Length: 197
Image 1: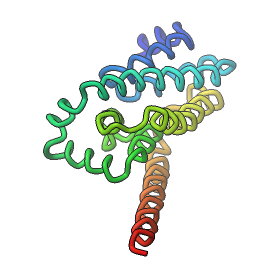
Image 2: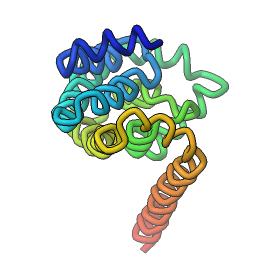
Image 3: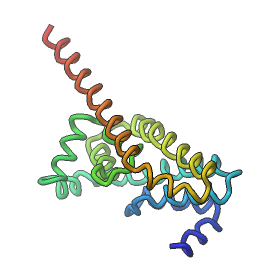
Image 4: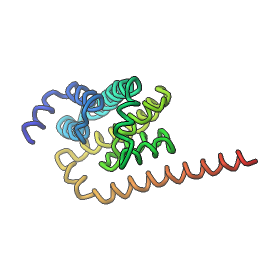
């Protein structure tokens, strides 16, 4: 692990841009961009915000590539993987909650909320590319800026801090998800009330 970290750090911000693009366009490597961003920010504090910006750009570029692939041929693949079980549940969430599923999964790296599944669902369902990009960018900015700031401020101790605060961070993620869920429920009720009047 130390060797891989040293190689990625040696690539610097350009390596992070490439990794973020590839990770979001192709098969996921959970936390790859997060790890490298944190390591780079710790190793090169002066370039932490540049690294965050490049992680955001790479993530958006890669996600747009994946979104377009799914838009062009994703309905067949989506039907295959979302016809039952967890896949059907994720597709149902996307149909009901829309881009909130993309926002939450792009902001909060939880294994139970697979980002790519929600991107595939929104693309195959014909969601506007502009709206998708806006939501994705709004989610990635705080995530990557926070990681860069953490690495910049705590340096090598960043991972230790994350490990010791895992439960607090999970609680924060749950609060954000529940807040968005409550907001959507309220909006649904208001829309239903308007339709009935």
